[in-house]
Image (cartoon, rainbow over all chains, first blue to last red; front, top):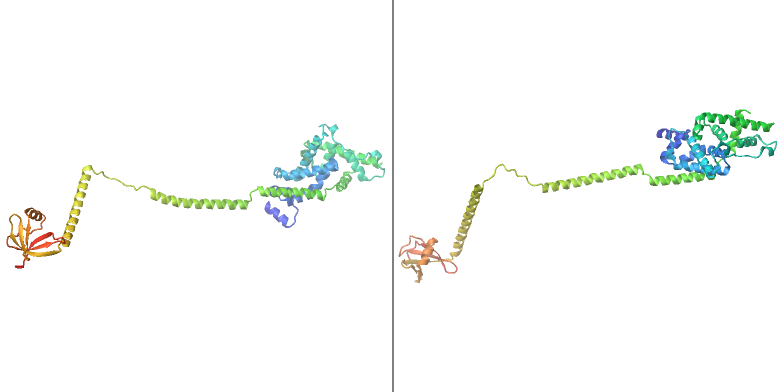
Length: 189
Length: 196
């Protein structure tokens, strides 16, 4: 693996996040972490922004990367780095919600990232603004499943990250897409 | 609205939320610190190998030096093995001791005789011709210088025992009397000369 990694590095070939993390786990080389950060930092931050606000998302993202540094030895070589990273980030976010007592353990109490009230918005608001509003209006778990799917995770990965069954995730995804469409189409009319 | 349009909206939304360079710099600074701490704590394989090799070399050297010294010490200290195939009885040992004592006495006697002979040679400082004139109640000699030399009977017997006299001497025989440095008679022998 080392020889392959060296060859890929020599010819500037694309190296997977798992290879980078495996090397980083062994060496602790900060340059490898920089490449991982460049590959995944925006994805993680966007996931956290969708589930919280920008300020909390920045804090949780930093804590997540610090945890990657501290616990790199816990990364299983056969697992997907991005899934591990998102799991760490999600767990930290949940811990923060529990600490702030915003998480009560039932669906009705899930934090809602509420955008501007659609009734007060300008009728010519852009499609993007409508999407942002619709996304924020989704229940936490449906939004989570939708964002994770958009980040390229399959049903199994999302189930692992969230700790739910695949059927539950499938259901959440279906509802999330349905609500997004309804919300955007409603404002188109 | 199709899934494709939703995906495009999501990607556009994502582009509006990016991490900053400051955050990246902060994380990588932490990573470098962790790397330096890890390097300080961890064992460099090359240094570890070098250290182990050095220790092994010293151990081998120490073993060799101590082994050599120990071997020499063992050689010095190891008792000489004596194999006894038979036991001498006490009488045999006594015979050997007696034989050794006799040999020693004989050597002493020989050396003493050599000493006495040397003493005689040294003692025979000068001599004088004389004539034995009487052998009754001691011996009387008349020297060539007309002196009368009288030896008591006890002295004659003592000198005869010491074989300092020629036992074949008769009255009227010509003799040679040898004296030491102190003038004491050492030897009296018959002389071939007819007159003084």
